[in-house]
Length: 172
Image (cartoon, rainbow, N blue to C red; front, top):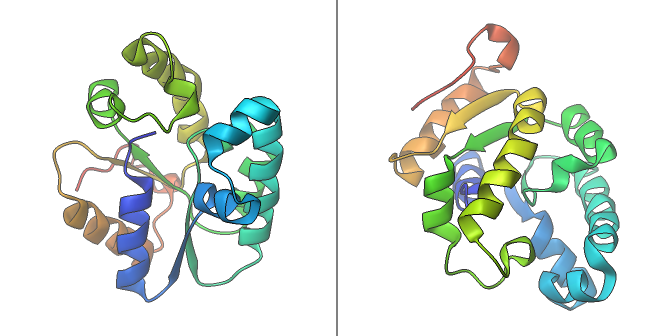
């Protein structure tokens, strides 16, 4: 949450002449309700089922850029779908930057109530190893502009870069 998936995804899609999809936006479009309401009515488990169905649907499309919700990788089937249907770019941000970007956002169900920074730290601890293992490349999204990050990712994709190329951390 707050790493820049939607912003960067839109820019990359535009630069590459592809169509951009955000899995969270697609869930809202299909259900006609906002994600916080889905969480309220169905819980996180119900939301994750809907998320998997949307990701599976989007993975059938060609020439797209997809941004998933931050927790999509928690489901093994989502990891498998993403890994087998394209390149996975992990936009990594430190907890402080994530906190700055999300601290006033009331639309993120997992960050409501309590200490937001502490929740972000816990999510980072839980998810970073999963993101790292899944990613074809890792791009730190610190002080760089969205356009610089986008240009860098475009270069990586054009060069068919993979994590196996023995470069653990990419910085534009």
